[in-house]
Image 1 (cartoon, one colour):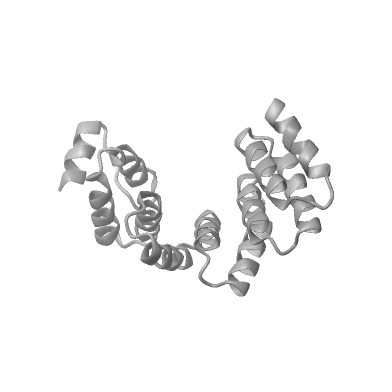
Image 2 (cartoon, rainbow, N blue to C red):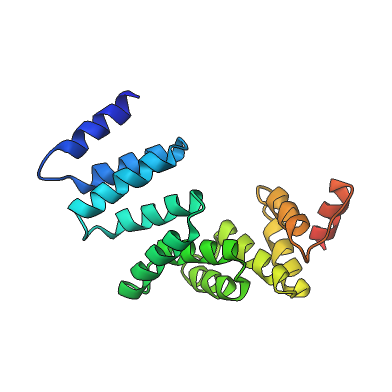
Length: 181
């Protein structure tokens, strides 16, 4: 509470310190206070429109609020101005996944993986898209590869069972055996 109060005070100073808006919005988002986070970030954007990170964070907060239209618009706007931004590419991929547009999401995940080839969350996102697109062979292979990392094995099992084109196992040991190949 004390840190949030200090950040709020910092956002009232002029000239504006845009990083304070970003940090306050980020912290409020982590606390689940999404409406407050969005308001703080929008205030920051009004005062410092040149700071792209404010728009990126607002995009992720919008996605958490299930305002996919706003999130998509923000991420597309950012990528139009800076096509190589990894954070906006990931945000748009997540938005496309939630929209059910798995083909575009898969392409965005592939693009992000060129910059971060070992990122397990990106690899999982791509695998889910492949499963949803009906490419079971590639999706299952990607999840098997992901499950080699012991920290990601449970996520791989959840993704495999959660996909409409995935597989469901009654015993976790059977899922683990399947993912081990």
